[in-house]
Length: 530
Length: 52
Image (spheres, rainbow over the protein chains, first blue to last red):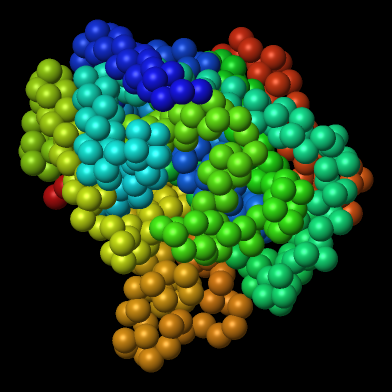
């Protein structure tokens, strides 16, 4: 594919996105349209939007690289994403969320929890957590998208960041939830088709069938580097040794942390409120599940099998590939494996389509984040606090939320611009904290709002604080990955972490979530009215 | 099985396919399933504390 054709494809993509944003703008009349698409979205659009929001570029590029290093054990994450993130989320959480949301006329996750517990304080807390941590998380996603913009157009980071931000800002501000969901659906279709093609082309490229390729990968187990063997790596078609460093990282952080944490993510929960009946949710289950199965399942599968391709073409495994970095050869990083593999194994024109796929994954996640942050600031915080207790006129509220989108985008833009290089660890830490807070602080209260009538607002509020603090303390003092990055534990206690051995690899969700769940139970029992 | 020696790995592939099949079955089975009457009124409800 020549340069002109490549630019043409990308320009057509952006024009289509802009048109869908315009369509959303034309159909947005009030704050309900802007926040939850008027509650009457098509179930297929909703399911595709849910899936596209769920799967960010990190899930494809980052975890694809993890699959190339760790092997097929990462498929448990794909399975949990389907089972927990779609089947359980839609059937057990989505159904009740939609019903209660409609009953209380809730338009945001914070308002939903606030209404369930009859507490403005809870609503404000949830909105504040979203508005504090999500811009940093969004900046991380933004940086991934900008990286691919640079790759496609060969432009500077600054220009790519500006163009990327302006495009997303235009359709989120103008089209609101409808604009976001229409574009999400388009982006989901691109991702889906791209992954199907990747799978077919990959098997054609290596000249093997499903079982033969798996067997070839199994036979590569004698190529595992000694340092990975020492950490418990047993091959790409086997789980790491039980209780080993690799096992803890894979199971607690990647599988449970991400797989369970997805249940209470505000940008996903709000999508249940965009349809008008339970049957629409039922209809969306299959679409959502199939989408995850193909997009996530294929990249994890192909990522693992990329070791065969590299062994055939370069005589080494994926994590040992040497790349040219400014004239100097160095070993490839984990998140460079998938882009390198696509560039090496696939035809040139597919590389462009794949970059479009990554761009779609970034944009769909990012637009949902901007929308959620704006709703938290403009609707929840302004609506309950700055706006006093008076009900705002709907037109004015929409203007305020649009302004909040602009502020949210500007915040993420500034963070993405300034926190590069060494400071990028702050973004990585904040992303982990946000994920941890969603699971540990929000999930117990969210679950009890749906299923336990005896949960009190005091219990929910205490649980949110315990979940938040346990997550932050865990990441600063107990979990090696973040604690080592921040260095606070070393400064205070002259040690990277306060836990010994492999326990420092256990994700904080494993203790923050149970603590938060116990808190809501105990405090609700203590504060229950007889 | 399928060239994969570890049951923990081939099992997850089988479970994933079953999960998709279940989602398809569920979607078709409850294609027109609406909320049952009285279901919404039985949802969790909390009394607001009256301020003194």
